[in-house]
Image 1 (cartoon, rainbow, N blue to C red):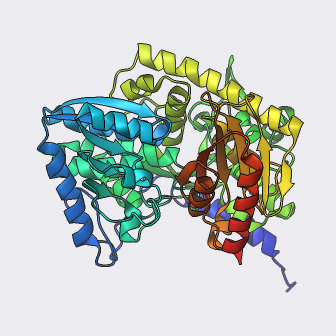
Image 2: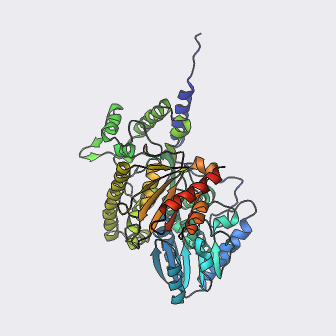
Image 3: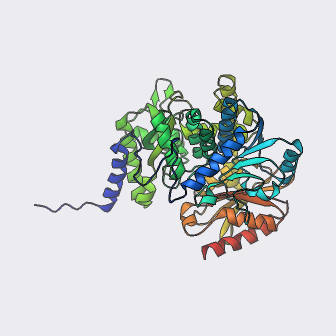
Length: 509
């Protein structure tokens, strides 16, 4: 009998396809290691008592107020968090208003103090705890707290996962924290779980492991049990619900697809060579329009392409993972898929129309959805323009960093998105963090930093580095280990890079 040798590459490719074909839709099983409270949240390693007491205390404090002013961030997570806060306050019969801010600064805090109103900070506030003395407030934020100011109470109430040894960059988002407080206020608010999933998706909290972990996973489990969230194993490329199938391949950046990413004609030919019709009548076929057999064929060829080009099993495995859909939203719309919903929200807030995103989260569609879709088209054009600008100007190396300075050519509200896209492109070195600079309207400079999970596992923490460096040049900053930002005075960019380069080198050694 002849000996049959099976290539290791074949085994890697086959395993990825088996992952996809194993179960296109499934229920999340609760691990025996997890404990769950009545609202679907569990707390681990003996922390449940402290966490439970903190969120219950915040819920009682909010419920005791007759008027609450919500202050939240201008991104998808911030809008979703603000919408959760608004909805639960309305249900409790509490007068409320909402304010969206790019960044919380001393001037904004002083104006809030002068107003005399009770404030609920969602998705921000932890980096400014030391400035809040005299302000009646609660803070539910997942960003790294201000160094040396990590107490749970500062003339207000402070719920932050980092205070309990949890990772706010991967285990829970600002919207998730608002949700857990909302469910402590009233169990009816469990129906807001979809917005919490959208917020976490907007912060890419599933990017590291291709699925949600920690509090996020428990939140998704609760959503699935309620029938609010659908969890599937599918392709992870962006645009499953709305983009033509070839566009998923053309704009793929995690992972980059050799010979396909950025090449429209090559992507159309790729599908045609597999015998897959790219059109159905006058319409382009989307990923959701394809049959299971067609999807499997595409993934099989993509995995084989990645592995034979030397990208390896781990890279190919990132093609498939958990995807999250809002079961009540219409199939084929940007509101069905949590990531697409989050992108729609980003396209409103980052261009000065956060109120449009808020109304959509609260269920006001028609006019607001039309406005949001128009803003989304503009957002996409802005991103394309930003990518082209950086490609034409180039990315500069600077020690253990790389950077680009967009000046006024890229909006400060989207320079972080551009930095993240460029880090996964052929123009950048994925082995070092990237910094993007852009001018702000007030004359300052926004510095947005992005890195990769492998670098984080080696010790890189952009949030702590940028907090420290920004202060030394007269600015302020913060964020997460994998993504952070700062506002610094114009003209200090070079000093900022010098100091940040040293911090990153120290972290790596």
